[in-house]
Length: 189
Image (tube, rainbow, N blue to C red):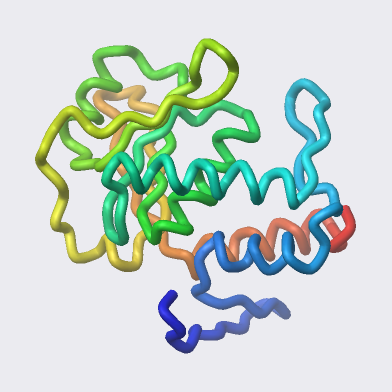
């Protein structure tokens, strides 16, 4: 993030920062590109280096669609490497990643598209890749909280249109470390 000093936090025996996802992943990929990063739903094993390259390609595609720092990227939250690459790419652009459930009705998705003020929409393509499209709307959010927001999650919408919940990097970094500690995960897991 532009060379700024990261805030460091400590609680519950854990230490974390407010660093975004991309710099953390890029450091791991640079240190050991052949290390396993992901096993997808088809049991394909992705190395850090492969995921890094996919994320770089997606970053270029997002930038071409108008994604810049502080903008939002709406994406179908399917369990695929391409979705993770989109999250990494949004972080590399210092944009906000906004995954929605693929189970969302077409009407609810259209409402999200109309209200989110996103710069790009990312969907699964018929060939298994991703399609990056510039938002059909010229309206972009000017919410000042977007500077510190890295993820907007959506509620299930069981009582109406899904509500957006903003998350900062520090909160997600804490949650990741806390879950890893609870599950007794080690770096090589």
